[in-house]
Length: 271
Image (tube, rainbow, N blue to C red; front, side, top):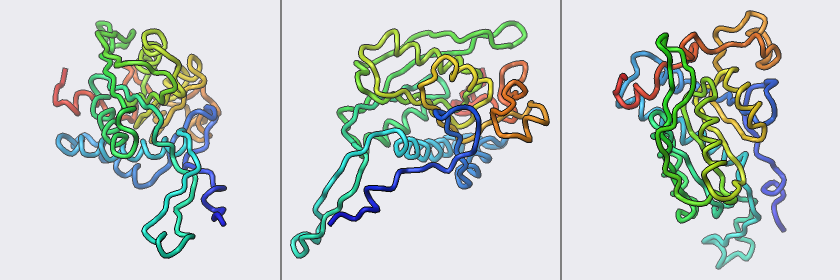
């Protein structure tokens, strides 16, 4: 007889309530929130900042796999099977044979993508795990205001047919980088992916408005929503309830409270 608990318990996230849509997941995890707070502190630099990114993204990856990746009925005989015919590990388990592509976006997204790539290789079919590279940068005017996103190059290593595409980028600010990366796969890669999943540490209402409007079926995961420049009414309400009054970006399109320029901090390159 199969134990029903392993076949009838859907995976659930601990996440905040919001009005942004069912494809948006903003986690509410005390342990990760404590680590993220340290990550955002001005005094946190190398090597600690990279170590924190590894912890945060390894956990984020596990959460999204539980929610987004397919499962299949699995039966495995345990070491007790020679003496007990009932000794079978039976459950719905993650299908670890699906193709996955993780996209490393220079600069801030390279380490998060590498964390995802190495973690996936440890328990998925490594022959179906791939890491691509995309070189994107903010385009600013003389007032340091963001006016767009420039693509200087990319390396897409093959087909994306039926693949789960992960785009891990720590800061989801304006949505411009995410849009460029998604469109790059849609226009340059061969095949149709099973899913596209954006993975962030911090996002803003402006980011969500841009991405959900243009890519309504893309899944978004984040540890925190920052909307520190919003109206009092918005701040006292569920996120998304007064979306037009929510604001998380300053005049230079940096997130408030945010964490500053993560590409600079991660690479010790302040340009």
